[in-house]
Length: 327
Image (cartoon, rainbow, N blue to C red; front, side, top):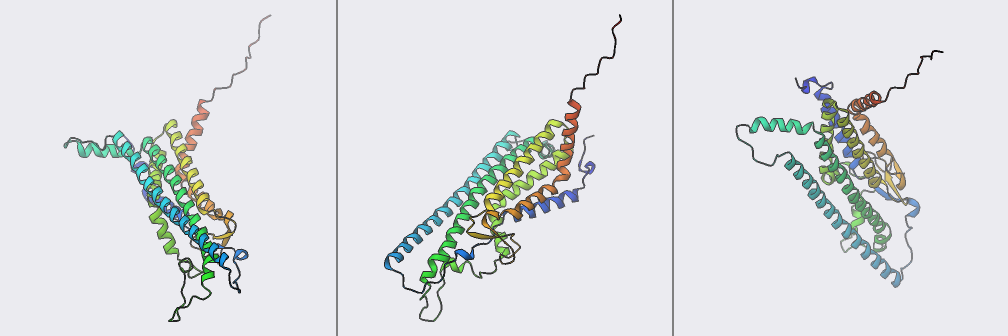
């Protein structure tokens, strides 16, 4: 009799709880943090009149920075489209391999579809496909977050070095002070909206999160159901590749230049806890380790089986010859 979910050593509600916790941790790992120029680099207000040459240089540099921001936004949009195309292509090839895109006989369709779906959810081929999807998604997300970091750097430069020059006499006829865009989007300066930060991350990395959760579902199934050592080895290799790619994404996404301070975590205000730019990924690496700990109940069984299989295949030590020759 084939095992079902009722025979699994881990209850279904535990699986759902761990998957939900993994999704929350991944959401926090994918979120963007507040970035602020260090106080020692913030320019002091200028009391004198700027020369014409300096104003022209500021205008030129400002136009260059705005052009760089526009280019980065276009690249982000292109990478996001690439993610859809590449992941969609992998899924289409996979579905075609399992003949899920073809027509089936009406009488056998429901039963065969159920069997096929069950096979897919416990297949190492599915795990390999989802591993590839997660790796590709994390690599593309690295490029997207690298562009976001560049945009943040340029925005900080504009709000601290360019816009203050034009704010010295920026009062309209009604007495309302004009606030330039880069300064405006950083108001209030001491706090930032955690809800907005998380919602922005969801729309940016939602496909990656779903792919990762599906990978964990299949990994759990393979870990609990497949007992063959070679299949366990493939599952463990996929788990390692996915989480190494996630670690690379964390370092790229949350590490900035040392001229900036970055928030420790999205739920903590910048004024409460901040780190130097090169150390910005410190707390996220800790959260990454916690994510691995959440999956230890399903990572330990294949590792123990692999270890037992390796010990069983070791050649037996040669027994010493105790016989003596007759004289």
